Image (tube, rainbow, N blue to C red; front, side, top):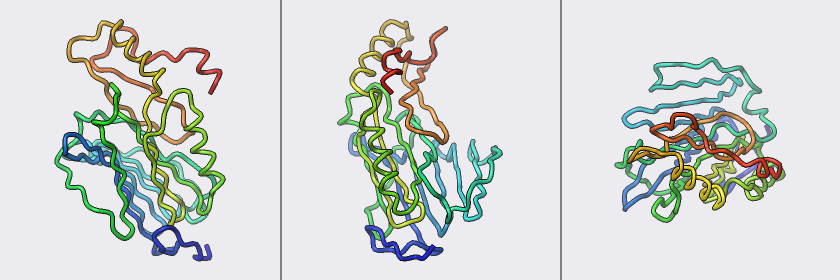
Length: 243
């Protein structure tokens, strides 16, 4: 790593690189933290809140070692070592999640962007959707304009999802891309019909999900309380062929 790349904040990539990215929901003038990404040197830390404690944390370290913890750190999952972060190449989705707004802490004190800190704020009041948006975090090799273009093109050409907003941290190795997306109008119409026909109890609502690395594959929508038989929105065969 020659350390000559400078991103949009003017910071040089290298062992002392740093960045903070926070994804925040806004509703009725209040804010809730949805996801966080922090970079310290060649170490990247991801986290999903879960009320008073984080329900999911993941880290990718300089050596290539990765760690994943759930339930506030009480349970640790076994992760396979990967390439050292300084040598990371390509584009990989670190994780993707859709969390019900009702599960979040709506007392988050939103801080202004400054230096290497960035916020991506999503106004839920402006979204006409019965399901929460999905937040995807990608790692892309430094200077990977082609990989970045490919990832965004995959989202924008999808029959299942529509990009709400996105933000990139382009002064670190790897780059960090956050994409917030929601179901397309066709998926929402199918979802509304499904919910109307499935006999959900009064007050039924959409729950959340978390998935691991991979290409954008569209929303898998879970409902709560669950119907007796169907627990996912069926995807028509013609949509699968178009993907």
